[in-house]
Length: 474
Image 1: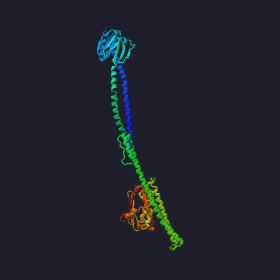
Image 2: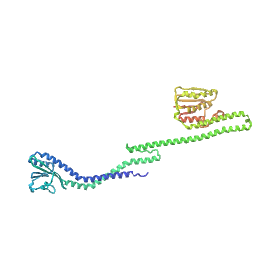
Image 3: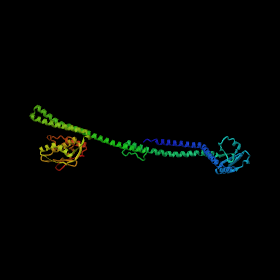
Image 4: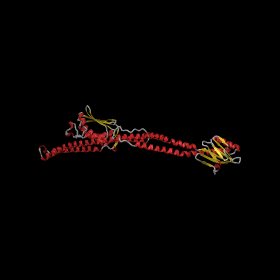
């Protein structure tokens, strides 16, 4: 089987998508980290400004300065407080007097020595944030309860974000490499899990194409792939059943064609014999040869031969019409007892004229379903055979048990070999081949075709005293 590329396509697509997502996320983190950090610090300073303002708003000057110092200490803030001309610097939990370094200078002790000039601070035109590369400052002014303007300068160091960005950039190759490795493994197992069921389905459908009987798609899930496997299995089962049905139909048609050819060959042979005999008698009568001078006698024989030939042709035509087959709309419900008596009626007179006793014992209230016209023809042939092959002084017994009808007559039983041939067209046992019997070998053949077509079980067996035909109706 040709190797599929679906796994490689799925793997490459998944890995490429995950790799692009990883690179995008890392780039976004490296770009967004500094501004996000500054935003967080701005929010922190704003919160401290609001809290500090609410704490000192109503205090006197001494308490004001003390509370600001305490808050800066507790909150780890860098706080410059200007009250009037006095400037206080609270940073790293230290208080540095303003006049220790000059009137207009604040020393903010931090690593590297951050120095802020008070004049530079005064030049800020309004309250708000003033970021630089190293610090972020928030200026805000309030009116105190002791009637002076107090200005807060809250600042935080932005150096950590620069250090963090540097660390991130150093770790970036390792992070990307580890993420891509995890994506590679995850993409492999994802592609394998996705394509293995499809590969298995392809292998089984390839076997189904070769009509292997044990081909079956394994159903391991209830998702779309599992439903696809189930649908393929049902389709293959339906296809297999259809193929078997078609093969059986082909065999039936072939067998029917063979039987038809055999029937036509036998029919042509059976028709040729009486036609030849009739032709010879007419020719000899025309020439007046020997005994054929008695035209009255041989005209009667010719008439009997034509009548027999006409009956044979009619039987052949009836047999040919059996190819039309069974039609369900002809089936009707009838009383078994009344139907048998109706079919039997004309044969009672014939049996009585031959000195044959007919013993009829039919149960009442047995309703059956059948094509009355067709099955009446079959029953008529069975009874006719019983009357024809029963000698004078013997008995024909007809009885029912439930929906089973039995016709038994006293006669010479047929041998096993004769029973195996008796339902073939134009077959007659040796003792009945005389033309005066009127038999042409189509009676039981027509019975078999009718009963088989209408799916009525039957049996024809020999008994100690004769033959028994048994039919079971629905």
